[in-house]
Image 1 (cartoon, rainbow, N blue to C red):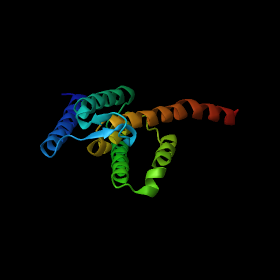
Image 2: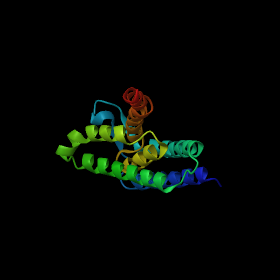
Image 3: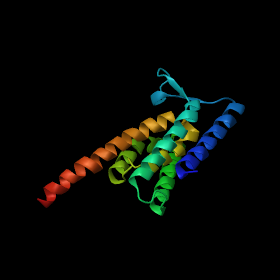
Length: 166
């Protein structure tokens, strides 16, 4: 069995067990877009489809573009992204007011420095936030950050570097 299939099955089992636990203990929660009750809600149950699909795609992308898909830097990036996702979840769930207002800017600054468009960061962040917010909202958020990060790292930085060296 390939590592991609193995990791996808492992992630699938994890999210399905989490959803089963939630179902048996009060029901699977839903979250409102932008934390606004006038907006539609998204159930955590979407994670049963999204997490396996995201794991398969991210692992496949990483295998395609990396000579060594499971080296220490990749694993460290994945674990770091999980920890950032957990920290973001804790800050929001506990409504730590000073950090809540700065969190978006902090994550934006991180995305300008770290190449968060790489698959291990996307997957780790979604994993880290899935317990608290399901998979859909973290995926949408990290994809916006990833798009910004890719734009800066792949388009803007080379232009600036060329202007400086010319």
